[in-house]
Length: 271
Image 1 (cartoon, rainbow, N blue to C red):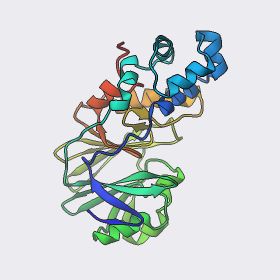
Image 2: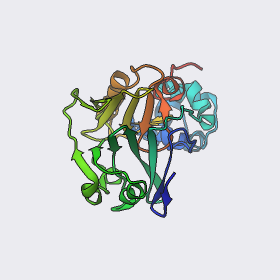
Image 3: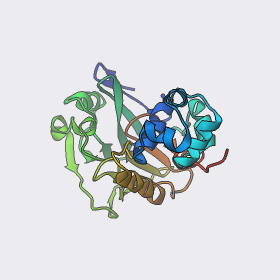
C-alpha cells in the first residue's frame, strides 16, 4: 500500500480505532434531544459528577435509566469500548487515510476493471493527489458525500486526475462499467448529505460519509436534524442486507449487521 507524509492507503479490512468513544456517543445523544446537564439532574436525578462518570465509561443504574431516556441501547453502550468491527477484505476497495487536524479523515477508492471511483477528497490540498499519483490512479469518477471542509479540501488539486465529478439527484442511479451507484439521502449531520450504494462487486457497499460511524453517528446541531439523521439512516442504510459493507468518513469500515447489533443509536434496547 502507498504512503507518504500526507497520509496512507490502507486495506479495507485493516482494523483502526473507532471514531467516537462513549463520551462522544453520550454527548451527541444529549445534544440531539436538546438537553443540558441541568436537565439531566432535574428530570432523572443525574448529578454533574455522575454525568462525568458516565461520560468516562462508568456503568450504573443511572446510566441505564439515562440510556433508555435518550433512546440508546444499554447493551450496546456497555460493550462499546470493546467494539471492533471486522469486515472482509476486498482487493478493489482501499481507504485513503488522510490527515485532518490531529486525526484522520477517510476517502474511499474503488477500482474495478477500467473504472476508478473516489468518494470524498480529504482536507489537505494535495494529500489525496499525492497518494493517488503514487499508485497511478487517474480518470477518477469523483463523488462527494457532503461539503464539510475535511471532505472536500482536495478537490482543486484532483482536477487533472478527474474524468468526471458526479452530482446525482437523490434516488437516482448511474452505471459505470460493472458498477451501479445509487444516491441516498443521508441528510442530518449535514444538509444536504449523500450516501452511495454500490452494487457489482462481490459484496454490496454503501459509502455513508459522516452520517454514520462504526458505533456512532455524525453529530447534529438540534433535535430536528438529529431525528432526520436517524430516520434517514434507518430507512436508507440499516434496511440494507446485513452483509452490506459500510464505508464511513472517519474510523473503520463496518457492516449493516454489526451496526444493528452494536451501534447504541440503532441496536435493540436490550439490557
